[in-house]
Image (cartoon, rainbow, N blue to C red):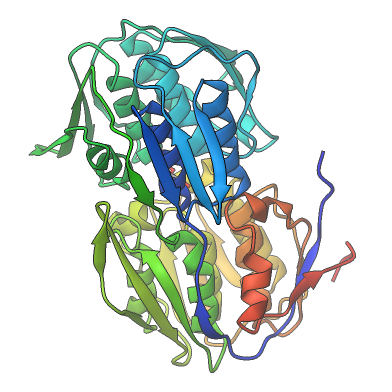
Length: 449
Ligand code: S3P
C-alpha cells in the first residue's frame, strides 16, 4: 500500500514560461496495446510514463508482448500479432485505470485465453457491465462480482462473432473495447455512437494499417472493422495530453498576469472542449499552428490571463469532448463572474470517483455557492477567487486532486488535499512543472487547514 502524500497549494504569482506537458494518456494506452497486437516493431516516443499506462505495459507483457523502455524515453514494443496473445499466468492488476481494463477486456474477449482483472479501491467500484454485455454477445464469458465489478474473470474465444452494437452511453472506452474485440472476430463489427466520443482508436488503427469504415447513419455514426485484421508495427509520437494541459490552462486563466505556452498538445476536436469552453468564458487562448501527426491534430497553445472569466451555460452536446475536464472547469467557474451551468454530467458519477459529489463537496468547503443535481452542477461565481482554507478529500481521483491544487493558487487561504499520490496515474511531474511556472505547491502535514 502507498502512503498518502498530503499537498498544499498557496496563492501564487503569475504563471509564465513554455512547458511540455506529458504524453496523452488515451493515446499512450492505445500505442502500447496496438503495438503489442501488431506484427513487427513499434517505436513510441512521448509515451506518458504514468502509473495507468505502466499498468497497461505490464498487462501487455503478461499477454506475451515484449516492451522495453529503450533509452531517452523511447519505448520499443515487439508485437505478437492479432490472435496470438498468450494466457497470462498472473492476475492482471490494472491499478486505477478504467481505460486499461475496459480496452483489455475487449482485446481478451476475442482471444482463446482466460484472464482475471482487478484494481485499486476506486477501480473495483466502477461499472464493467457496459463492456461485458457487448463482449458477451461476441462470445466471451465473464465471472465477476454482482453489478459487474472487478475482480472479474474473462474467458475469451478465438471464434468470436462480429456484432452491430449501439452504444447506450457516450463512451470511447466501450466503443474501443468492442472494436478491439472485432479485430479478431468473424465478419464485421460495427459500433454506432449517437454522440461523438474520442476517436483515438479509429485514428491509430488506421495508422497501424487497419481499414476502419466510418459512415453517417440515422442517429449518429457507424464505425466498423473487419475480423482477421493485421496491424503493422510503426512509429508513434504521442502528443501532449489536452486533459493534463487543462490544469495549467485554467491556472493561467485565473492567476492574474499569467502567460504560458504549452507545447505540442493534442487538440483533437473530440478532446478540446475545455479550451472552447474557456474561450466562451472570455479566456485568451491561441492555438499557434495546428499540424496533423499520425491522424491527431497537434499544436502549441498560448494562454494569457485576461481578467475574470464570465459564467456560461456549457452546451450539453459538448460534454463528451471535455468529459474529464469538469473538475478543473468547476474551479474556473468558481472564480468567474456570474453563473456557470453544466448539465448532462451523469457519467461523472462513475469516473475514478463520484466526481460530481467530490467537486461539490470540495467547492462548498472552499466557500463556493452551488447547486448539484443528479447530473448537473450550477456554480455561482462573483468574479473573485473563493475563500479556500479547506482540506479536500480526493478519493483516489487524480483529477480532483489536481483541480483543487489549481484553485489553491488563487484562493484567499491555501487549499490542502489529503493525498497527492493518485496524480502519478496521469501527470507524474505535475507539481514540479506547475512550480517551475510559478506555482507554490508543496508537501503538507495532514491536518485541517
Ligand atoms: C477514455 C475515455 C473516457 C475518459 C477516460 C479515457 C479513453 O472514458 O473519461 O479518461 O481513453 O477511451 P469513457 O469512455 O468511460 O467516457
